[in-house]
Image (cartoon, rainbow, N blue to C red; front, side, top):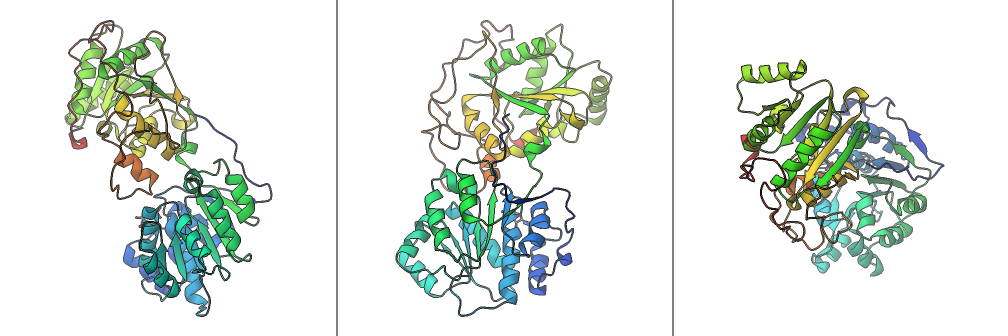
Length: 473
Ligand code: AMP
């Protein structure tokens, strides 16, 4: 895992994580119409990003927030905007707030949430994104909504045509700024920011502030911003070394797992699989090895059996557990210092949960994920979601034939793989992780199947599992 230094301007003030924050929306001086909308939406408790952002944003300070999709960041920047516009009406003003987002899908999500939050107010919002009818957008701009949610390219076109006036702009939001830079929007964003009124509030949200070019954008666009530190998944797992090993197929994975269990130094290890069947198969394979003390756990086991396995583990009579996610949820086994993902976790949250079995209470731990050709893109999504770069581990003499995709896209996924149509939540890194759980095609050239059981010493009955539903685990 790599950790870069934060690249931030020196003049900004950092708000420490322990700053007192609100625990209820009613603690804020939000208009009752917004509180009513929150109530209608069932938002009872502010999320961490909301609790930390809203009070500061309401002071009109510029703000840098490292927040991920799914953290509740939309309401974090939109509530202060709506509160301000509802309270201080400015009917003669041109656009009052502009939210720049990297993708149409995110624009749609932000618009939907804005409409939901503003439903009891008279504040209006509109969306300007590429790929949609230009004339209709001109019509929308003429109606002069107070809030515009836009992707940079199309907005810039309208700006160039004089269809848009940002000289009255009070709040500029850059949402998912890292992705906008990734997608090559840096110059567009800077041009748009230059066209905005200088005395404005700017709020920048980004999953990471370490992105190349981010320092420049921050310097150009924000004035003495305050930075909000949020606890990221990465922070929570700093004591865990996260590695990947490439594997041709399950048989190859099994040989690597055997090697690791026989050669790595560890007290206790958990090996995760995605299915109950695979748990049983691997358990059987590993139990044939005289020098390994192995047991297994899956969701179908009856409680007395589960208890027995847990006791064996706690007492150290077995030190290797093969388990499914469901079986391992909530397990607190002290002394686990090695986690192996035989199958990559289906999404970022499951991955976090798995590796969180080790590195507990600040102890050091190692998490090794076996990545087959079909799992490369999933792995890349998880890296992106967690903002980590997994170390690549190889075992001399056990390298496979597949050495990873030949070419990578800027998001770390294999170049040349077919894009899925219509991923409903394309704007969401978290969702992207979830969406890629069952890739249909190998990420890159299919490896040749190594001959079964040849040099592995592993039982040749180690068939690739039939994929089953998560519920089976
Ligand atoms: P976002 O990160 O803004 O995309 O929000 C992620 C999801 O969380 C959206 O579906 C929101 O509707 C929801 N959400 C945002 N804030 C809250 C809250 N305080 N309580 C419950 N759900 C929320």
